[in-house]
Amino acid sequence: MGPLHELDERVEDERDDRGDKEHEQDPARCRGQGIEREDRQGEQDRIQRGTTTGATPGGTGPGSSAGRGSCGASLVMLRSMEDALPSVTLLFCGDVVGAAGRRALLGSLDSLRADHAPDFLVVNGENAAGGLGITPKIARELFTAGVDVITLGNHTYRHQEVWAYLDEEERILRPANFLRSQPGHGTCVVERGGVRLGVVNLQGNLFLDSGRTAFSEADAALHELSNRADHVLVDMHAEATSEKVGLGWHLDGRVTAVVGTHTHVPTADARILPGGTAYITDVGMTGARGGVIGVKREQAVRQMLTRMPVRFETSEEDPWVQAVVIRTPRGKRRRAESIAAVHLPAGRP
Image (cartoon, rainbow, N blue to C red; front, side):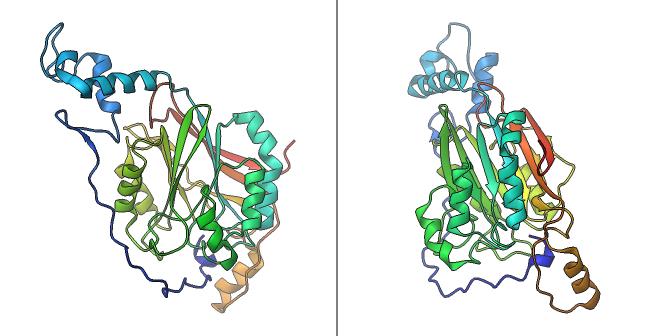
């Protein structure tokens, strides 16, 4: 959410934050070769090019099949698995704002499926309940409609009724860098057609109240998902564009996509980074463009003019779905080949 929506009550820090230590950053390594199991793509590429260190045709050096031993066997198995990995299409929808955003999304799903044939659908539901937070009822409605994973952000705990649900439902995420004592979890894995998609939810540290740094938590989350996911999508819910861009570079080549949320305004920088990670600073919002980042424009303007408190209501005027479609290449783990923005007016036949 943008500054106009920063009216949410701060989550009380009465919960005990014991156990809130950073994950140990010790990725499992393939002993003797120094290859991180978290990301074997570079080694696979070298094998395919015939340039593995020390390899000689028919030889027994450290790069040959005889010299690689069990590590080499693991790499051959990995190569076989990745060769069989099909291409997939990911559809990620920006912050769903209020009833207008929910109606826009649900009413556009048939068109989105017809146009893009997504294998996985991930939605940021941070503002789905009246513009602030989400409820179990709304989350179930989205899941029933075919949403695979819901990510959240700074309004996660606005509605107390969702706190227990965050622990019960695996597919709804709050930022992983919240305190571990706070309800919920920040990663999950969903599977379809033999492909496992890991989703990581993070929140920025600049101008937002996060328990731990997003960057080290991203590393910890990838370590957790190292052998559990073929592709990884990261939702970075952050105010500062610099923080999102920085995280994109930090994770380039290690995840399939880094998508930004929170500001409700789509950016024009969708691209594939040099390491193969799809990136966009902000996807935008699924909600009413006739307001100001989702709230009624007259209320927003009045608050800006008077500098006095104004109770905001979500706008219903001119709802759109703003999303990105990410496609992955066949046989490539945690790589993207394209990312494209989707701006769809609600109610389009």
